[in-house]
Length: 418
Image (cartoon, rainbow, N blue to C red; front, side, top):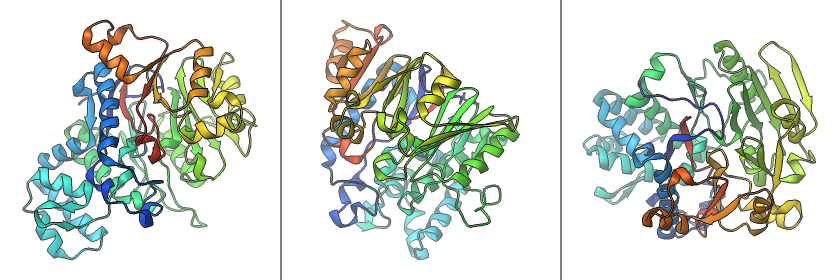
């Protein structure tokens, strides 16, 4: 069984799931953008070029074989078992409320064509649109979360993301990398209504991966946000404690606002003692507070995310502020994912190249800034090796990527860290 284990936000990244923006994104119209949870109409070729730079950087640090494309995983899962494939087609036809004749079109397809159709919604062979696009599939952080040696398959809050969730469940059920995890009881499926039913007052279970962060092997943070419910957090907490996965589940309550849809839009950890943060919420506690649930049954509360980190994680934690903590720059740069970074290893993280005041804050904190194009050229000409990169913020081209409202943290689903 392949190793699947993540015990921090900053340990050396070893394997990660990503998704290159697919052709479905090019079908989003202005009228349907809001319904499909995409904030803008993007130019797909440039968006793909920018994402290719992102994955090329990851490949240099991790090795190309450890940057897993979710479409390839879906293809390999389809290849693994014909029975699973037929069952999946039947379920998706039923879920999408399509006539069986559409299923008859899908069954004869080779698995490459079937994979493309399931992801993009477009059956090229018949010039037929079967499904809506799933543009948020590029944000693989949301589909599943690895917590120590377990995988939590998340459950999206919005209907526009349900097919992403369906395909994710199939991958984790059928793909050889993950199949043994299920047999070992190490997959927690939030979509199983027998284990995760609605509350007696019909509060639904929804948790998206951008609201889940494992700070260390003992502490799991879950945001209670626009996309994640308190009932879901408590339901998952009980299962995690029963299985002994973590010792503390931390509910981070933030405003239910589109600008702060997940906790990774307002803070991410990039080093042992450095958190990039949006000052009004993280430091000042605007519209937020923190509840800590211990496996022992004890509970604690903090008036801000900062106070939680200083009290329970490290008294030496320093907060690097988006926009240098001043408006309007902090508001602008939080919106363009200035707080949303993914660490490749402690002190080396990826961000977008459009947040100049946050870059000033990084430099003051002792980091150098290097653009991804410059870094890749240095790797190519041999003047720098990935293992030599330390205390560095790598900026990514982001004219189109940033318009989708998700940063590098959103675009990565780590399944193994050192």
